[in-house]
Length: 405
Picture 1 (cartoon, rainbow, N blue to C red):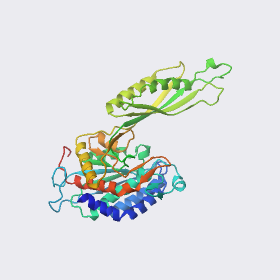
Picture 2: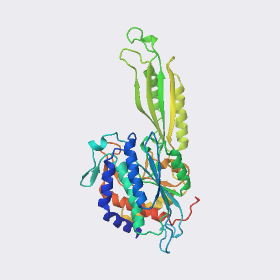
Picture 3: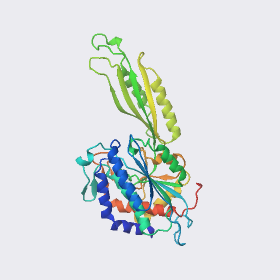
Picture 4: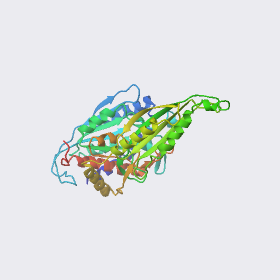
């Protein structure tokens, strides 16, 4: 049984996996740490080259480099490698695996909080988001090739160097590779309860600046025009746009303004984060936020803003159900509870699902407290989750076309 064979291989190579994980975690690779990201990129590139991948380094001046590793399919050598879903033994499909090299931690975090193991828990900056996932994706392929699996599909592994900052440097390339792929697996970690991710919200944000008029708060405050108050009045209206049942949220993430307690604030600014489950909901929410920002609350205060689209929603498309079915079957073979989740966090898989490629997320190991100093990895989830990922990739090499060419 493929899943059991992969699991056995991973168990035998567990110590080797942990050594690579420790090496990666102990490198500062926060989105602003280009040198560290580039070191991680170089390590991963060399590891994939050892496995026969053709590797391309996408060099960037203002953010970490990205890595794209490709390998053609292994083809079929016998008639016994059938997909459990279809019984189809044709070699079919191109699979895009999405990872990222950066973390959300500032420089110095690796020295202050190095890789540590206590019982079943490993800690360290980016240990599950997503350095364990980088290791997992690599070892899923190591297992498939070491076992001589005869139906591994053509695969592209894309490792962004600025995912935590929005993947702006590689967004177009992600979409390009997504269009070429028949399937996409995002190797982000599973939720804390072990659930995979089948949908993610879309995300965009506004940066707002208000300009008023300064005046002495004690002598002639009536001559001032308070920029802070202008934003405060808008915030009350923005807060009313939250629809938690629908999944549409408006969050004021930062606000600052004024220079002195005794002076009417001449300037103020804030950042607004929007999340939504569908593109239609998102466009409606964006219009309503714009209307509020463009309405003058205090005569004499001028408001301007910049708007940035981060990622579209990750939604289910044609083929998603079949992909989830494979994950479910592999889970059953390995004794992993099959749980699914919809989350408000985003990933690079959002871009791929938006163009119609069936995408599944959260197939990495289990952990929690991501992006915090308490981030942790459950070590006992490593080999089982990586085995499931490898099994699904192996089976995808046998699936019949589901409407994608």
